[in-house]
Image 1 (spheres, helix red, strand yellow):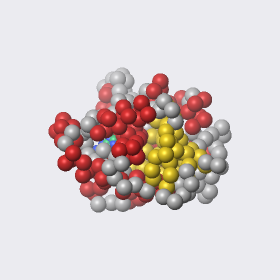
Image 2 (cartoon, rainbow, N blue to C red; image 1 turned 45 degrees about the vertical axis):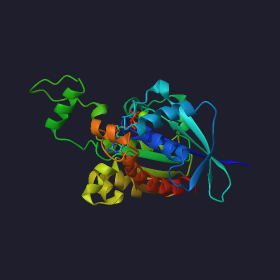
Image 3 (cartoon, rainbow, N blue to C red; image 1 turned 90 degrees about the horizontal axis):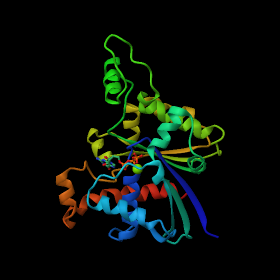
Image 4 (tube, rainbow, N blue to C red; image 1 turned 135 degrees about the vertical axis):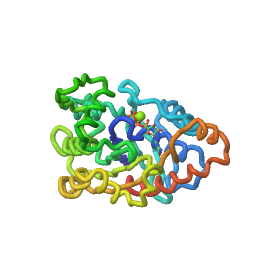
Length: 274
Ligand SMILES: Nc1nc2c(ncn2[C@@H]2O[C@H](COP(=O)(O)OP(=O)(O)OP(=O)(O)O)[C@@H](O)[C@H]2O)c(=O)[nH]1
Ligand SMILES: [Mg+2]
């Protein structure tokens, strides 16, 4: 019988989830690169969404924000050389759903069902980490978010302004508590936009320790010992999208950068299929 590996892709808004899915779909469907995994079939009706996002990715266009209405689960049947066929199922969820879980402690039944998967890919945009801030920084952020700031008055606490690592630790805690707990899980922490971070010469683990120390500590000492956690740095896009990059990507000679992804996909696929 075909086995199913359900994987839920988590991440705050703009953490790189859709870009990764687009790149993964291109790699699996275009046969340009030798990959350990190959696509056997896709569930009917899902190729439209995947082809749309992969087409944007090929043209170096930034993905549209995933909205609640656009949430959909992608189920692919895959085969790894010599191994039996298996199903990989993951939803392209809106980061807003996870932001909302932190802010209001609520999520839709569909999101809750996805969150009961044993495999978790948690995306963090390596270059958009909101650190614990100074009051002056928080005032600036509040203004940018359209929240009233009056000189001389303290800025009211707002859940939306919390640091990235606080939101992510809370999200992981929710996954370990009823009604979302399912026992042991395999978690891949994916530092996306790694092209923007790897100039610092750090490994993903060192980067996490330097930039998200609370989360790093929580992964080691807070999570149940039955959880298996691995860290990855992934560049699904190869660099920041500019008009120039967009033009270059239309030329086949610019494909080299995409290959960067292939190596990461292979190690991630080894994680995905225990
Ligand atoms: N430099 C760089 N930027 C990236 C990479 N991957 C994604 N991004 C950028 O990160 C931003 C968010 O990417 P998305 O894939 O739309 O993020 P998402 O998690 O699907 O966001 P929501 O749909 O809002 O939840 C976009 O501006 C992307 O261009 C990467 O590998 N490198
Ligand atoms: Mg998205």
